Image 1 (cartoon, helix red, strand yellow):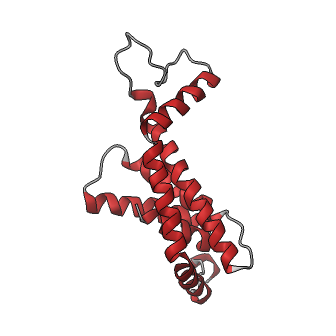
Image 2 (cartoon, one colour):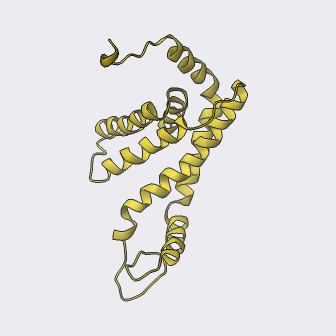
Image 3 (cartoon, helix red, strand yellow):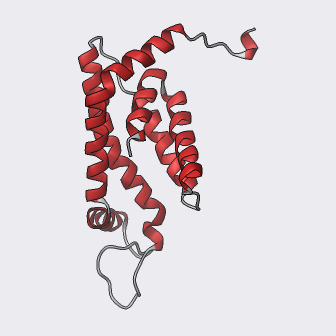
Length: 168
């Protein structure tokens, strides 16, 4: 989804709080427009919000090229992280019949290390390819459109006056 590139860039420029709001509200609006509302939506909003928060924590080097490189790298990593977090929503609940153990699914009898190993197997088998395409598309979109979007967002941030009602 191309929206992840915008969540990353907005979070990068405006900081973690605004990045969280951008991520969470973007997924809410997207779900409302595309009829994607369901029990998974709050978790999607939370994960997209965390993507915006993470982008807000990226260091800001002086060079615009370095900023673009950092945003691109984060966008690629966030594509994988979003998918891995989203899988945690359903992983404990998806399982075939309990007659056979195929080594993918969560069980309360597993140790922490076994759970991590099984989750890694589950992630690679179920969503790694999809997440890789999200990561690549996000990174590619940031490489293509990131520089002008970053300039616009930095310019807007410099011109915007932010004040709280308490300081008035």
